[in-house]
Amino acid sequence: MRFDNKEKEDEKNGYQVASDAFNANSLWGYKLSKKWAASGLIQYRTALLQKRWNNPGFLDMGVGLSWTPLKDMVIAFHPINYNAVFSKSEANLNSSFGLKVIGEYSRKFPAGINWTTGFSTFFSYKNGALNNWLWSNGLSKNIKKIGIGFDIAFKQNRQEAKS
Image (cartoon, rainbow, N blue to C red; front, side, top):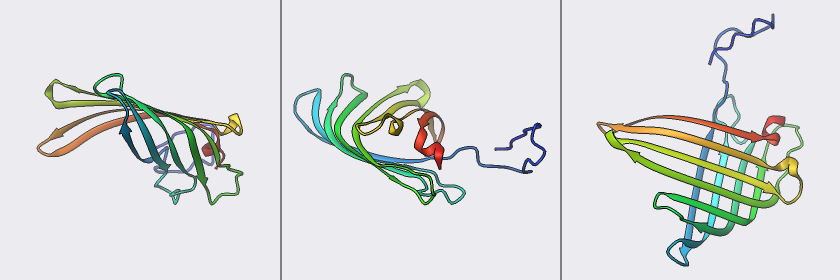
């Protein structure tokens, strides 16, 4: 992304990284009923560019329940969750136990267009300043076995802002 901040005389020329993200997660469970399951979750988030791999990195590991109120929707509540934070910076970043809640809904539209929206949040039992959330939306389409997509996300994470 190219920035143009006319108020700064020492602005860098050329392109700069505005934001990048790498997210991976796995949710698995044991079915208790048609709509409920005991579940486990592993979720990892970090940045890739400018030597930011795992600086900071966030790894959530938790167990709880998953609910599927609709065919293409899942909501997971994991009151036993550990949010591990990794960082090479000198910023004081803290890991903690807390509640992890995730929700995802996907929909297929005519013409082969897929929409997915997801929300993920962590509420720390230790300190509210360690809470974070991420809301992402994506559109995608396969054209001759090549996937084309557009994603946009909004997030709040005070610890990530420190690093």
